[in-house]
Image (cartoon, rainbow, N blue to C red; front, side, top):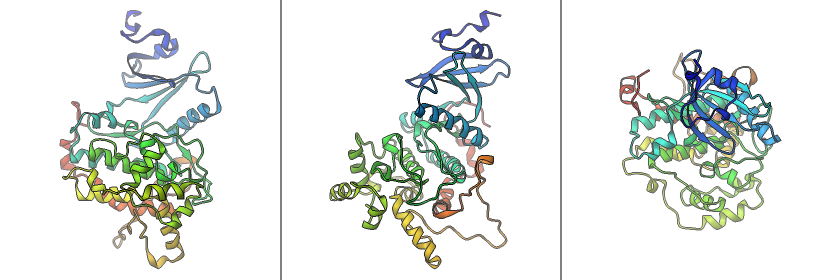
Length: 386
């Protein structure tokens, strides 16, 4: 009996508390960083394979405590969604400083899959991105912004099922107004390659549009096989973006409310430009390129156009990066996104950002929908079909 509880080679018993090792059989270490360690393990009671993340000194300062608290609370709310990682358990360490988070186990992540070359076929890309949009629409319906969407935070299993993870940087916006008087951009440290322009320009506020930009970068990376804008610094990141994405108008620059954004954008915008098509393979589906162009826009452009539309309803939603949502058929019920259960009450259909997301939804669904008969060709890795 004791022999069966001996950890495998490479797994040190001192790394995990005895009461955790008694419940879970550690199989192998998946990764280690400054924040802690992640293991693949098996629940001794149920036989379920799980991932255990041990966070070192989780509450040593305000920033770490907030990040840990947000991830736990938000995943408890959102974990019922099929495309968001499930948090199965939270376990305190004996030293009362470390903490263990137990998640469902996945096979790989999108970053690793893209890095293997041409493993992703068009049908994979459509199905993966459709699921990502479902997850994003769900969390936005609860007035929450993920703020750190990138390929390494998109988990996949053998049947190409997507789970969005790592909600440590997520921010709830419940009760805060949308627009220039909304939440200030503070302590935003998401990976540079996937940051929206308004974040790079230190805009004084943000909206769910920062997630939509990140999704555009992820889609572009799947299509291209490597990052769209691999900047080496904030200035270089802006330079790469402005070489490809149409710059904002003077009105939009004023709305950014960033002291140095005007001078930076004028300086960088005068440089030679290239089309988005030039960055992508020649066989890129036209509907994928269309969606990409509608995701990779300066958020201010869309917001200003939607504000003008609110003042003049007859104009319709014609923002850059958004198109009029298709009208409902007679007798067809309009489905509203389900809010994130008890913590949140605001619907994604409320406010100008909700209108923008609704307009984008028609195109994303058209690109992402996959025929049921095609699902048999989806698996990325050997494994059973669900």
